[in-house]
Image 1 (cartoon, rainbow, N blue to C red):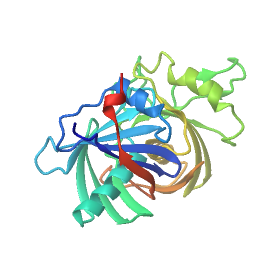
Image 2: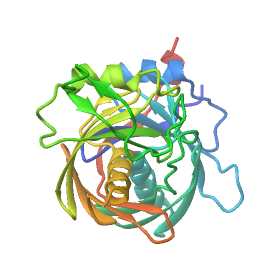
Image 3: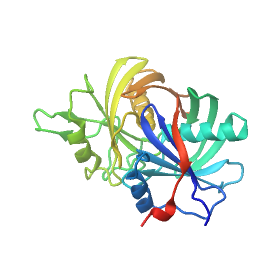
Length: 283
């Protein structure tokens, strides 16, 4: 019997990532299999990055992304840094192009602590996020938690950076029970495809602190796409510059929203352990 695919258990600033290599194999991954794998000892993850052979000429791989609940994600910045670091070690070069559901993403690897990935261009149109109803100005939409005359949170900025995000501006990201309100907001009817929910505190024009409830994963130590979402929404509201350090519970990421509208994210990765994944054990 052929051995199962190789895996690497990694993390990006504490965002738990499982990279499964299906290149050159006929194995397939499903949401049910991803959920099963997440429950196995030593394999728990926030996102699973499934690396396939390239689908498009000129790219290095097609990457399928699963959340811990088995749902598919379009983007995962911390996970893409992990995939890029693995590719650099295999290929002996530092520049790569990967394809995901969100499109083509480029990456460069300077070291294990400095990996830069393109997160594409943000989408601000209500239909592109998407929202269930039109909003002319997505810098702040009508959405609140709590009493009408004294809401706990209100008027989030919304954006799509590969997946939907809502950003609430607060003075203290730890002053809210995000584990309780996150699921309600993630599944609010205004978000037909659900959304990642972030609390953001602008410390200075070049520094923002963030906590995120991730769609399909819950509270995580770091969410790369959320860091990008917060950075571009802050710049759009003129709360911060276009290059900022976004500090998540797991540590800092450098986000650069460049003049050509592309978002670039730089940060580290860590390899925890690796081995062979037994797909035959999945029901």
